[in-house]
Length: 397
Ligand SMILES: [Fe+2]
Ligand SMILES: [Fe+2]
Image (cartoon, rainbow, N blue to C red):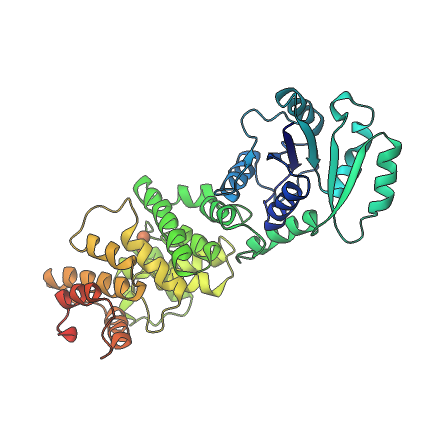
């Protein structure tokens, strides 16, 4: 007889401990399959909650590569009892198990008692500290429900902790990589200024912004950066780009810029620092690493952080970028070495400016010098990287 488990929950967001609980139950009860069933409603939604479709998406991303696990999505009935009815109907000749957070089970027990849908279902309840598991088990027995506790982490509290961690622009360690990536790409659990940012720029710039966010998250994943910080920095990096230069200049002067500073003469240079000011004052981003990455995304700086580099390079290579001469080389370098990709992108900008008879800004020159010094006489171990850099600078000959 097939043995099928269902795992209803909010998964807001899905956590590693959900996966661990699923694996443990699979092994302990020799299940053939376990089905994650994100619940649509039935609770007072926390203020920072994500929508049902996003939770389904995160669940699907969490179980990629996991054998015998799947997620109920389109066909999901809205509540717990209809979900169990669905399970009984669609797995008519299987032995059925239901994995449920102990507190969720306690809350639902009265509704489940005596219902045909619950007949012969074993409720396996991951328990957390403070749960009165034995009392719950006895109460369940009195209601005719078969409940067994399972030693596990605290799921409900951990979900709200994870949401809080993302809100403060950090990557929660307790989230599976796939779910964290969806969370970063969709901007879940952070302050939502989606419409305001979109309205403040042209459609072209908006598409570029989303492209940069996607590339930044990919690079963060590849190079071990913070997915959430990079996604947020990318989201706001050009929030000032379509502003009038006069207004940008005023904002910078009001914030203490020196009136002789070279950046005040170029809209292209001003939008980084002005974007950082807007991100903080208008969009309430207070994370220094994120604000710095926005501030320095056009010029770079001498000591670039990993987040700076990721935003700088993502800005240059995002998929919506129109073709420009060095694009393929920068994309290739981004696969091997972020510093080399950033350096090549700066060379490209410098050459473009100089070819038009203009002067390349000092800030960029300083970043180039700092990046060149990084490679110094220790040539890059990858000859392909050196070959590309040599095309652009005699320093490497
Ligand atoms: Fe920009
Ligand atoms: Fe940009």
